[in-house]
Figure 1: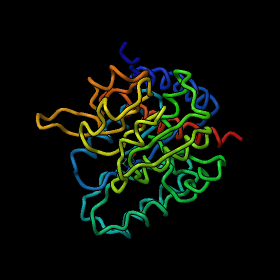
Figure 2: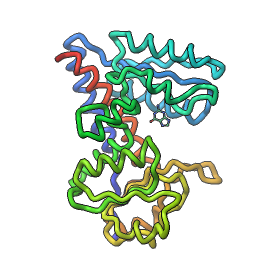
Figure 3: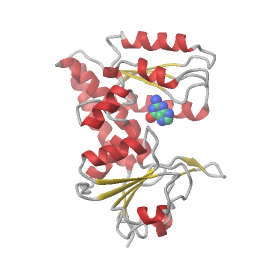
Length: 283
Ligand code: GUN
């Protein structure tokens, strides 16, 4: 029997619809949620991500502004732009698209964003809140993954979750959020020995490696829930995940596709964080 496919596209649509209603409620109370985006330079992949975010803002009724400075912008000038957004009443979320040109210190830029507007959840203040389980902005991709699992009533508590990949944006926070949901969590990474011995134990497997077909059917336990966070370009220009979808779907119980899986949910959780940030102005 084949796995059930968890469509991030469908869940994203439903979630965006409910966010639209929350936005309309906010507008009726005089607050239009606002997202300020800074896209430095003209990297095509980053430009495409930002277009996706603008589209999602339109769908959910969020006001969005994209500032597109040239890649020659100085760090000081960029920090000045962030300061301006930090001080604007009508902007509730700030996003600086990464990566930044090498002459700019990314960590310094992230630290400059007011944590109360850090809808990416990248500021160490929000990372700390996530670790202690306090209320802060959660990073969008891991947050989207949890949302996808819950949408199918997939139990997390007491289950063994194995996260392959330890990036600050996906792997590490995904493990932390699964831990918060009371999973037993294992991290695998490039230095892990005999990775398959770990991945085969997973009830929930998160693949966030960045290598096409990294996870095959032989790497998983029958009935596992497999979440594919990979975004890889194939030799013929198509989008592919980290999981060999065709073989793994025959053995897993649930699987997320690429494209149309975690990606649309990441952007949707950015909208969610922006709406939450604007709702805080009501209290
Ligand atoms: N670059 C790739 N993914 C992301 C993201 O989620 N947020 C930001 N700011 N930059 C990114």
